[in-house]
Amino acid sequence: MEMRKVLSSIVCVSIIIGLWAPTVTAAEKQVKLAENATSAIVIERDTGEIIFEKNKDEKLPPVSMTKIMTMLLIMEALEREVITYDDMVRTSEYAASMGGSQIFLEPGEEMTVRDMLKAIAVASGNDASVAMAEHIAGTEEEFVDMMNNKAKDLGLEHTHFVNVNGLPADDHYSSAHDLAIMSKELLKYEDITTFTGIYEDYLRQDSEDPFWLVNTNKLVKFYPGVDGLKTGFTQEAKYCLAATAEKKGMRIITVVMGAPSPKERNAQITSMLDYSFSQYETHKLYDRGYVMADVNVSKGDKKQVAAMTAESVSLLTKKGVKIDDVVERIQLNDDLRAPIEKGAVIGTLYIEKEGQVLNKTNLLAESEVQEASWWTIFKRTIGKFAVSS
Image (cartoon, rainbow, N blue to C red; front, side, top):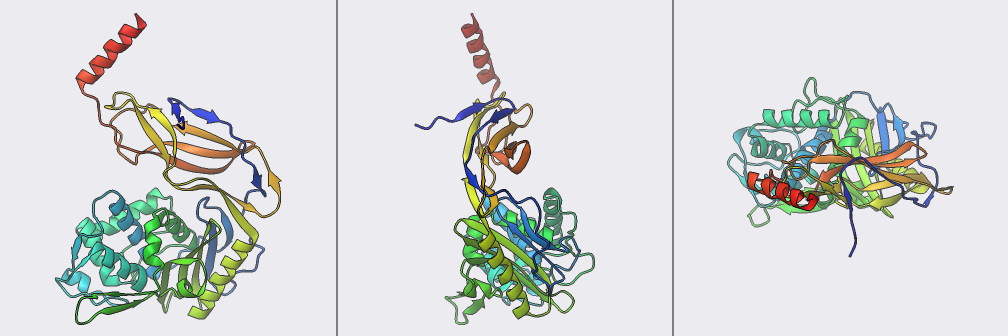
């Protein structure tokens, strides 16, 4: 049986990991990519390392790429079991009134969360986005507050939302960098690509008038490995796309904003993906949800809680040069005491080389720990006294 570490304080565990190639330390600005875009970025999903960037922090209209954050909050609600895929979502008159890309929801029409999410991911449904926002938060305004709070939590300094679907509005903006980080966070939820990776499907299949969905992201069909994420367009913003692809265990996220045509947008994304997959590789250390250790908890109904990785942990490297002596270090939060919610951050895993942090991720509580009853604490105290005697 595998023995797990039991931790009660800051711990440093040295593990030598044989890797190939030095880790990436800076975006390669000298590479000629995305020349016909206003801004662009390429990052690797697990590490968040920037492979290439151009005007990454410029504030621009995110248009329908706004829905990356909308989908992120939907996936979080699903994980917390606030909603389920089979819940029925009722369409308000306001949601049905949305213009632009839509699935033509009628006031009072109901669809499952699964179908609403499919409508957002594949058809970029503005009406479905508002319907889901109202279902989760009560109103679009409350959901927008959640979006802005999440952006703040993620450290996004060049993003502010006014609506949930990206329809043009004053003071509604983001950047290529911030959209890439949102995409990175969204892709923690592996289910999402079962929606964003659909090229064509149907809604209302059992009705007299089935609705045909065709993905606005054509690279899903034409670039092997692409399975998301979101397109966007207005006359002001021009053609935009946040795309992701996975090959040989490495997932790349690319964002282009302000391309002059859909053909040019797709060509630039294709070039960035080709470059990334030809020049880089990732080395997986731990999957999302991997239990690193059991952590002691004071005054809980359980004495310990498992600390698991919040996301996949990898190192991104250029192909070809060997490097050794990579160390992992686990740092726990001070004074871990009940109550602790399931999924609460209880520590951090650092991957280091000669004191330099190559990657880090939060460690989360695998389960809830409630406060122990006075009787439980009393019995433990008596037990300790008996042992010491």
